[in-house]
Image (spheres, rainbow, N blue to C red):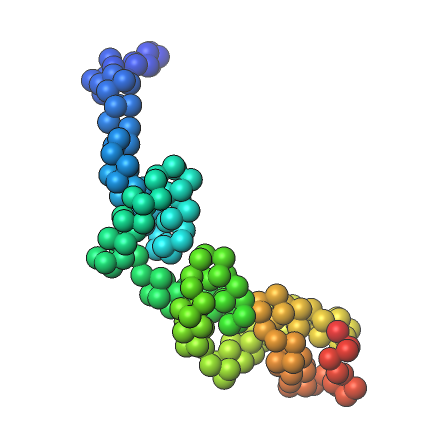
Length: 193
């Protein structure tokens, strides 16, 4: 079979590279550019107003135009920090097992207001949080079999601590899981790990 020569884009009828570059250039009007930036960013995943404001600032959109565009996006419901925070809490708690403290920290880094964070993490009560901690420990417990009791305790409680669970709850949940498995937990206290 003979070797086929590669053709340049303009030979293939795809148009010249200069016309393609003209089509890809962003609009020159700052408000139009701001809208295009926000729409592009919102296409992939929901974002907070702060995240979008930071993106507009980075692309040198004037502050007054950025605020006007962001306010309009809020008015039509494309930006909703309360809905974002609620969905974030539900998703990250269910998917990653994160506790309220870790979720609040993540939302703060995304620029969500404190009152909205409080409302969003408020949907997780302590019973649900503890049930999730128990599930996490139950999954990880199998991988620690054969280790010394104290080492198991540290690993399991450390895993919960990294996910934002309070020290007291972590220790209580781990001790209970170890007891259910037949481990002797006599003498274990918070200072043991």
